[in-house]
Length: 390
Image 1: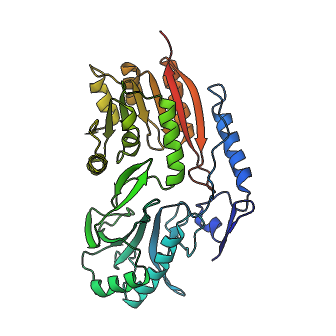
Image 2: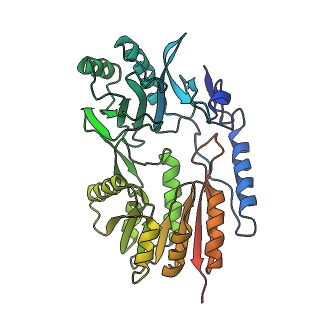
Image 3: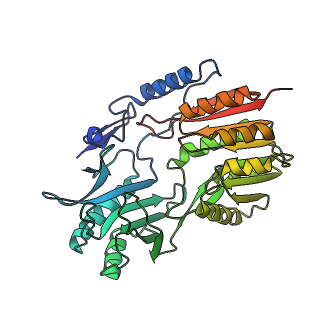
């Protein structure tokens, strides 16, 4: 397979994009792609607010700092790695991806050779036999720290020391290697158990001047350079002051709450995933932040309770693609924060939720789009809503 990044018009070409389905904007100048995304947002938010041009990426290629590869067996090629064709479990071999970190692709190529050399049999989803299931690589954008996660069907690791020696000789910049044991007969990538084979078992990265610890399971934005722009806009739009209590709903490992904590009186991060809450507290300690607390609870349930007597001046919300829930939105209307900053990776569900908030007495003051995933259909948005004077 082959791929190419065109410096002159910032487009990409790829020989497997139609089979893979990961990139929709191929062989299209990047400027044209951004115009299409801007037009989409303007149409979507028509009658709600004015949306400016989508903020593009400086060099829109090789940006994914988290790379996942399925390990499989091909009758002609032997051991292959790649991705499932969209909507299927048919493995498409991928050697070079135009949107993935190049160093990660280089490590995956070495791993293919080592798997064959050490006779590690790829896992077969139909027979439930085999050893090596997935590869997950994470790289710190600022720190350049590199984590390799090898997902296996068994907790044994034959010839482990020799394998690690061979891998690290080829790639001495790998800072940690983790074995994740996934013995489920499902399509889930990661199992529950991790074994640290080399290094600390995590990497760290710097975002908005704060340091974050990233474990194999951590949710961390895959395009940090664009994330930093997005977060800085969200903090600016929120107009947060030293008198403000801020709720960071759907907070994950605490990235945005920690980044804005120096502007606020107090920050409360709410997250349902217990491991993410542990990571968030670790990250707060790592940055010596004392004015933030994390609550392990459904964001809607928490707000219902908090609304009984708690105060929130600003709410930052970054829900999943499905958007927020009616319960969360109603609780939000009960608390009546002065400002709501709504970050979304799915503008369609965002518009649906914004309409509910508008009916509840909020006005959309601004909306900005950020291209977090160049060459794909996806676009991220941040909206500021303020409470109308009663």
